[in-house]
Image (tube, rainbow, N blue to C red; front, side, top):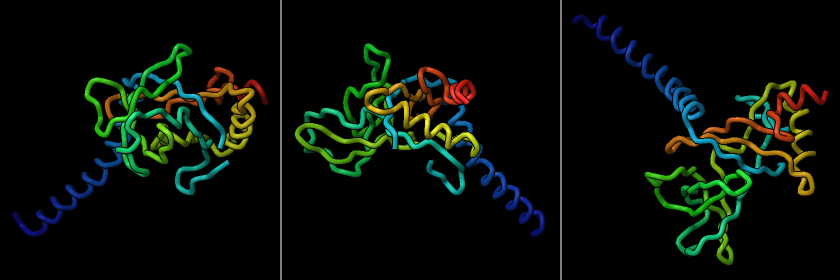
Amino acid sequence: MSRRNWLLAAFVLIAAAQLAAPAWMIFSRERTLHAGKVFKFRTRPIDPVDAFRGHYVWLNLEPNEIKVADSYVWHGGQKAFAVLDIDTNGFAIVKRLEHAMPADEPAVAVETGWAYKGKMHIQWSGLDRYYMAEEKAPAAERAYREHSRATNHTCHVTVRVNGPQAALEELFIENQPVREWLRQHK
């Protein structure tokens, strides 16, 4: 094989590798959205813009503070897995925190925060931004803030969990997908 053929083969392999990485990320997210188990999370309000990905609604998922019997074994900024279950109202709850992904229960990667008197603050990794079209994001953010107040609290999100993957599926206002709610309340 000539030098030119080797260079061409190396170029093709490098190009394929560069295309495979984002393709795998897209495939993993789509597989999670298609086959993952659905969990509803209550939210609290926080129009931010990401220069590369666009406008989004900034979410603060609940629960963001959970009871732990062994808070002394956790440190701030540590990766953990929140083992999920569903309460009587159909919303996600955290049964416990684990250091490793459990094999037989749905769990989502979180980051630990402060611990105080048997409670641990957690941050939901990668589930804090709901991206929208630029022209709709400001109206969605206003509606989200208005409907997420403690006295109103009619917003939630659905998250699909499939193994170690979690994907934000939809933002709801008054039990309607946000895009549908915005169409009806223009």
